[in-house]
Length: 256
Image (tube, rainbow, N blue to C red):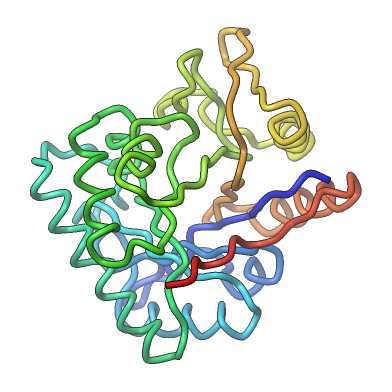
């Protein structure tokens, strides 16, 4: 039987701004990547999202990003590996405090946006982020783009890693995501997304924009929660997986 985790970026509201449909999407996914205040989120949103996930039995992970509220963490900054380490430690620690106050441990860490994409190809940044996760709690998993430098860095340092693939993004021939400023970066047709997800799980392959098949391991599927039709999109993916008898469940935190 095939098995996969479904994750979604959560807790990205802040102040008076509301982003996403977290309560409804949490009924569909198995892991939540919760923003830690740099690219989105605030203390009240972090606390609330932890509680919502806990109520639904959804595994909780930290979603650290670049300090860029205006750009939602999707603009690339020039940062050093030490800066990447420090900001990752800081953000995981913030969410971990709310998790511990609620009696739950963090399952994983998944960088956000530009930080995620930078670490996918930059070995030094990837190693800094993996080191930060390991130094805080080596039992936590590291989520990264499938076959990326981030996943490799996590494996080298001794973390359990999850190769992540995307339901709503297109791919380049080298296995990286198509940049968001490209006209075909996003998949908006639910049936195209379902086809891509099922092929990734059952065949370990995805068709790139230029027509090549790319081999990728699919441990966890990312569903974005901030789109106009995010809820319906997520529901369709979950239904398709269950119709194919694919087991959808979160990972289990390693024992100390």
